[in-house]
Image (cartoon, rainbow, N blue to C red; front, side):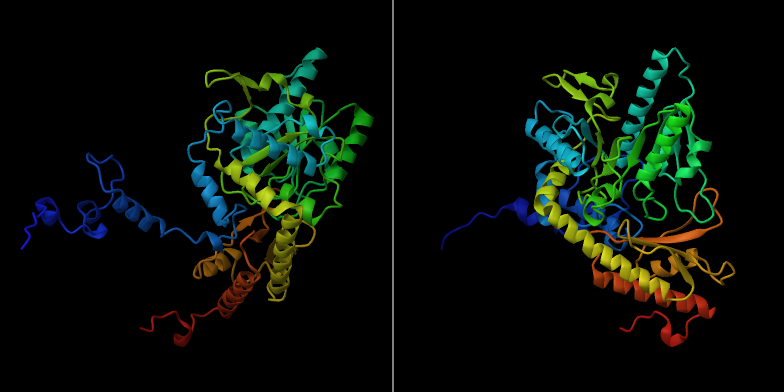
Length: 460
């Protein structure tokens, strides 16, 4: 009989189950790095256990950001983990793909000088907006200095903007003149501008997809009012369009809407690739009408990574995967695909709007027609026995995240609720949300605890 030597190390090894290892028998370190190493499978499993406590991204109707991607996007992202977007000499093809995306957007937004359009990718629409704001400030300052006038009191005029513009104003020493909402308005109205624009105004921000309500501000009418102000006062004020959400929606859902570089006063546009651009988290875009609108002083030449690379950004190193995934999505869907996706999303949003309007206690502020695929509403009766915050809490019992919040000044007394319908939010899922919303209304309207047979319970 053959003899076989036993591997004593193998037979004496403890049972190698992830949940029987020493590290799994204690709480994970939270304030001090552990002294020793651990099995990678175990650490991954334990971290995943914690992440399972997060909400379900597919039920998060508060976020504008992409929560679903095709398997091919995951593969491209994985293959791009080691590509640094800033290192254009080492990764020239990634830089080329970034350039292609800029020119595709310039074409989509009717830039008159598409072949020479200046633009760049960013970490998101907030950084992109700030870069657009910096260009506005630098051009205004250069003009004032050339005229021998003081340039120490710049201001920026806007309506109910996202917090990134408040950050821009504070970080870069610009007075933010945020125009209060009129009683029946959800955004900036053109006739309000004369009260706020003056010789120190670096620009007016128009929002294509108001964060609070999801409708569009009238970019063309805002520009026309600024034309009239320029004719009357000489204040020649450019427009920056914050199209964080609408930049990837309007060209496909509202192709006849004039809001982009077709409006001569529009100097720059920012958008978020990882919102309705359907790219994964981590990419935004800013594009200027023509090269001279991006001041040369804002562009830095970097030589220590090899080559001589121009860069305009608020940060430095960042992964290139989201830019590559953006290009994939543009090629994969094309104009027809974007149109089909958002037509379906808009139809689902309108169906949700009809359901909300039919429930009784709600009044729609935006019904899903004419702007983003979304719905926003408020309570019809201010003396209602429940609030929209109560509704949100009820929906959380089923995993839905549907935010409630007050409108900006001067409509802070109005609390609204908003649901965003993104890629991956199916019509059936919207119908389930509507059913859960009706259940929440029924419970809150009754003013009593649910009957025993209606209470959630375990049946096993």
